[in-house]
Image (cartoon, rainbow, N blue to C red; front, side, top):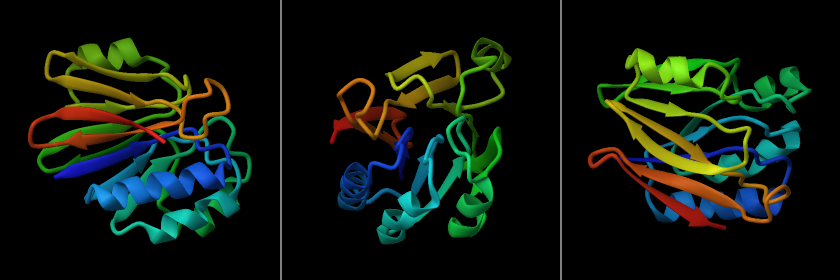
Length: 159
């Protein structure tokens, strides 16, 4: 089982389309978006995913009603907590209280965005992942991540 992970797309349609192609080529079972889509039109490329997606709002997502409608309710206010393959997953945008969330050891996987910096770290039973920025606007490096859930191995892919 593979999870596709992206964040901070910030309306970069070209990179969003490339990310979707990467996820489809790698046969991911679910895509998680950790926020900052920005506008509802930026969701259109997600229609080409060969799997479902889930996500949270970020601090730059101003038109929440439009994003909610366009995503058919798949984008939620943070935190998003769900079970996937008997693992507890938490998705947030801003890493507020991240240390406390890690220390709790409640979650198997914590996914966040906002910082535009990729990260994959194990803390006890908890794997913490930030896929970096998909847009490439801030760092000049656009990335997504794929998590092999069976091996808990994260691969970052530059777009």
